[in-house]
Image (tube, rainbow, N blue to C red; front, top):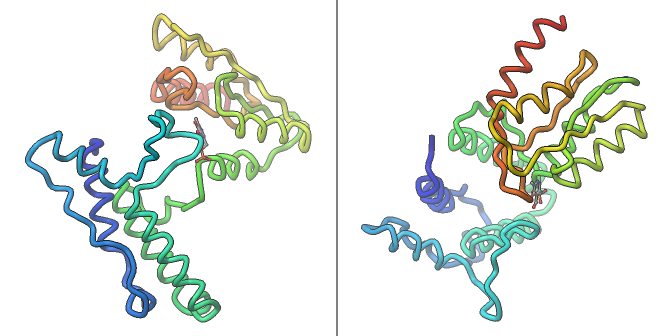
Amino acid sequence: MMNKRQFLTNMGKAAFTLPFLPYSSVVKEGVPIKSYESKTEDGFWSRIREDYLLKPDYINLENGYYNFIPTPIMMKYIEHLKMVNYEASYYMRTVQWENKASVRDRLAKFVGSTPEELVITRNATESLDLIIGGYPWKKGDEAIYALQDYGSMKDHFELMVKKYSIKTTVVDVPNNPESDEELVAIYEKAITPKTKLMMVSHMINITGQILPIRKILIWRINMEWKFW
Ligand SMILES: Cc1ncc(COP(=O)(O)O)c(C=O)c1O
């Protein structure tokens, strides 16, 4: 399991090793990235802090809603954007697929999956809505999500209700559960032989409640044997 510090260090190193692209040799941009290595814990986090340009007027405690990206990543992003705009169709018709495959392969290595298991999307909403909207729904199929889940995905499930006449079961996750088993039981009760898709957040963003995914999954797998 990768810890937060290791993850951020790898992210920094990844920024160093982005593919060399012809545009970089024509237009020089960005600043060299300073090392993230540090002898002390505070030194490491101060180095991470340096990568963020923060507006001094307020203390930003909200990292969701709008994800502000570290300056070196933003610079690299802008550089790539300009490069693609500069090379235009030539880039698109020649190396874009190769470059995308190379990014996917390195990302797969980074997260510990095979490249085939990985799809790069623009954000969490697109990823989840692709699954929710891409399922081959049939009338009467059932889906489960929680009242406390994120709005965009709940909306997409409800769109499926309108489009394909499926049924959604909305569970209510308590703020102060007594045990994991209490949470498992809530999902357990909602599952029927018609359940095709279940959305369970690892952590509910409004309460911070961590859900026992593994236990819910194990229960679901056991149930599959009973249903079919
Ligand atoms: C729990 C949860 N899911 C999904 C999202 C949406 O993420 P994205 O902007 O990557 O689509 C958010 C955004 O804050 C969130 O808090």
